[in-house]
Image (cartoon, rainbow, N blue to C red; front, top):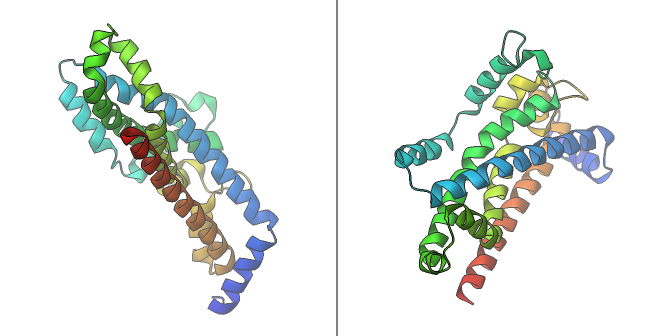
Length: 235
């Protein structure tokens, strides 16, 4: 086990000198999480908007299920994706297991319910506010979905940021489907877990600091967007 003072000093040195190993892990983490959030946005935003606008039998059950899925245990998601992508699974032919693509799929499954649930709430609130105007203009359900998605774009960014925060900090699912392979699928969270278990605190602390800065930055940006949206609503 390293001396704590020396470990902190080495961690800051790794960050300040942009250590190649640390940078590789950070860049891969960002690529995987941003890709997952982009896919989750393509699926979750329209899904949330449709649930907010369209009324159909069983809608309350779907909304309840969607809200429940926001708390999906990552290890369960990882297990399900692993079974789907394994050689015996239905998608095993594609050979995606233990690749960044498998990690993107797992993170997308985790993030979609978050994005969709927040989008539904945002769109539903906006629809209640503008329902009369939309009806007067004769805009149908699909037109409402498109219009409200566009008008709520600033607020919906907070849904994507919330999804990104979940994705970038996730460890359970990605270590199951990615395998934590050096130079291939090792991301910040899995590297921190591995290096800590090995007693190499310098790299673990360096990655932890970077992850903390990203998390704080994402939350600050989300708060700023919410305040900007609120000011725009009351302007």
